[in-house]
Image (tube, one colour):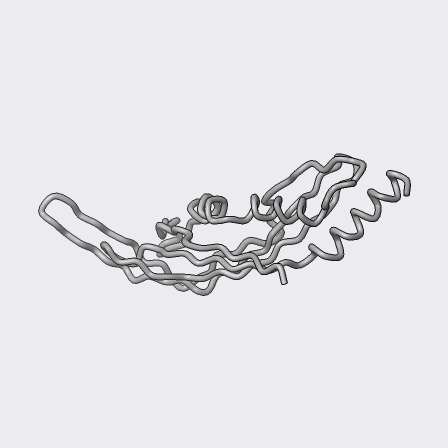
Length: 159
């Protein structure tokens, strides 16, 4: 098989097998002073192959369960803790690019292991923690509110 045919077959295989791989994210968020709630998000990722740059590109969709928090305040002798209200809303990412990795031609290696290792690099506790930590909710009076999200687990569903 020629290298061009081999690369085309790689492109077809990646599109066929890694078009809609689901994953679950578990996280906690600050509810009140010294109190956290748990939340879940469900997502999927897909891989695309850019033959011009010889890159496998990973994009994801993610939707969390609804999150809400009442306004709470804790006054102590030295510190005042105020947690602004978060009206019911979800974390949503749509077609968000998460990772790119270069593949080499000829493809005489285990391409499935290559793609799966890239996915595990792209979607894990550390990367999801960094991504969700940046998320801000829209609070009262159109202000941005940090919920103190911390990812506790990520599960990729390969089946």
